[in-house]
Image (cartoon, rainbow, N blue to C red):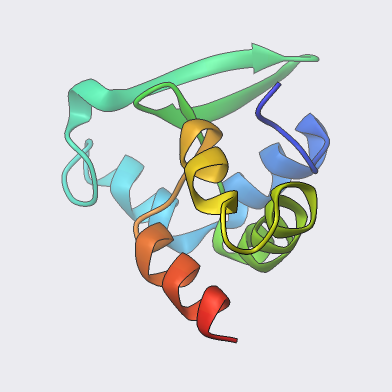
Length: 101
């Protein structure tokens, strides 16, 4: 639960290529989130990055993630659901922009 609509292999590959995440990890946990919030979870043999126990969604997958949650829960109410499971630095702004169309 919480990886929808992505497969662990795809998330892993995109997390590895996400410049923002890689810069954070190379800086030793300085930047977008406090280091204590970082964790890893092994899912189907892939080590995925989480912050505050929410999956970190790489920039390449964010539009698809927004579309998935809006379709599942409705444009007016999907923001609370997506925030339970996913996280990225511009999530709030991206939700606002998505709702604005």
